[in-house]
Every structure is written in C-alpha cells, then in structure tokens.
Image 1 (cartoon, rainbow, N blue to C red):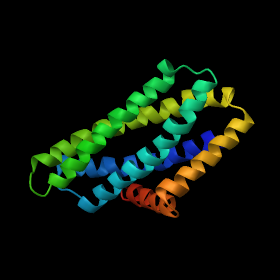
Image 2 (image 1 turned 90 degrees about the vertical axis):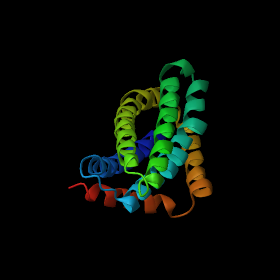
Image 3 (image 1 turned 45 degrees about the vertical axis):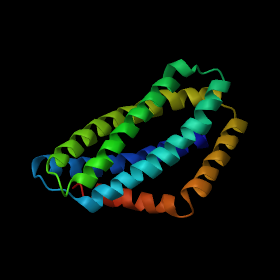
Length: 181
C-alpha cells in the first residue's frame, strides 16, 4: 500500500535525524560542547518534517480514515496521538534549551535529557506504527482509500511544506546521520 510505504520511508528519514540528534546530545552531555547549527537543523527537520508533515499526514488523514474503517480511537490511534503530543513537548524543550545554550551551561544538560527522552519515545513510536498500526491499515483500507491518502499526503507536502523542502530535509538527515560515525 503506497500510503503506508510512504510513511515508512519517512520513518527511515526520521531515524537518520534521531541518530544525528543522539550524537549531538551525547556531546552536549559528556563533552559539554554544543553543535548549535547541527542541533538547529535537526530540530527544524523534527518540527517541520517529522511533526508538521509526517504527523500531519497521520493525524489529518490516516487516523480519521482508519476510524471510519472501524479502528477504534481508544486503541493504537489514541496511543499514537498521545505520543505525538509527548514528542512535541520534548521538541519545545529542546528548542528552548538550544536557544539558551550559549548563555546557560545548564541548558546543555536539559537539551541532552529531552533529546534522549525524545529519541527513545520516537524509536518506540516508529516501531509501533510500522509493525502494528500500518499493518492494521493495510488490512482495512481499500485501494481507493490508498489513492485518496496518497493525494492528501502529496497536497500536504506541496501546500504546507513547499516544493523542494522535503528533499532538503532528506539531504540534511543524511548529513546529520553521516556525522555520527
């Protein structure tokens, strides 16, 4: 099913960013150094690509359609929505800590703490979506539903993220992960 395949591909990109974020947070925690520009890139990708684009596709299109097809909101969908909110809280905290890092050494520890919690949350979240929710979707959605989702997903990328931005974030994700070696 193309819609879930597209979301799984986005998960792989997000995992690259998590790898880079993990390296940035570890250096902040252990070496007390902060890679400001790399952190800003990672956070931009997480805010705009992972949350606004990817989670937007799920929350505005996939989850409501799954509910229409009988998947209860108080099951896996509810868990995913709750985890999206938890992730947003960690991102907000990391953005604030990154902004304060130059003035306050304690912000490095705060950044590293929220980064670690976010990374763990999102890695588990991705596994649940890939191995549970998307498999459920593939069982209950029709080919027409899939086409509808693909069109809606493309509209989000085009109208809300912008032409070429998705590709830029993919490139940045690979760069961030490549620095992890």
